[in-house]
Length: 221
Image 1 (cartoon, rainbow, N blue to C red):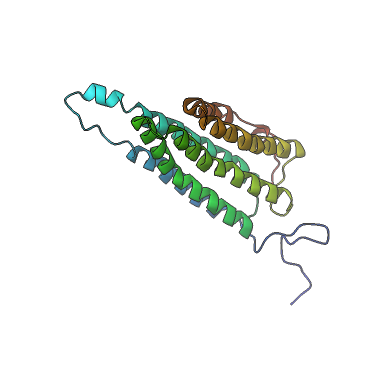
Image 2: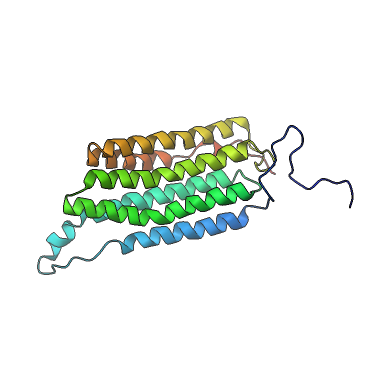
């Protein structure tokens, strides 16, 4: 009717959002639910021992299941934390962000299965290299999706909140490093399975550290 442009559309020199835009609140709430379900499913992959006459030994022999559970639970936890770090900086989401975030959540929901394959391979002693590579490839999808979302919102100013350049660079470095870190663990796992698992596990404590994007450089929107 009037001459007012729709909100958040790009001008001649501003990249436009992909489709309609909306607030990220429901996206974050839905994502939190998927993360919660995924970590809950992890414990269901630990099957009780069958030999109760030697219960202590049987429980000890389940160490691959415990290891896969702990590593994957903490990995999903830190992915959840960094998901909030990213979406705390996003003021609006478009169709592309919704699509890629859905693919990210699909990968997260698949991680319990990958963890089960990993633990079963170490239980049996067969297929360990393939299991670590499979686990690493499933995990690698997460930083790929993070980087796609973050790159997109960085280039569409209407989607990104009031974040200073230093914080944007800090978050960008964190997400890019994840690609190479998990990739390195995956490759090493194809050569020395336990070494690959150790490299992937080392990803957990480092990525729990806070970064500038979540502690500084933000202004009221």
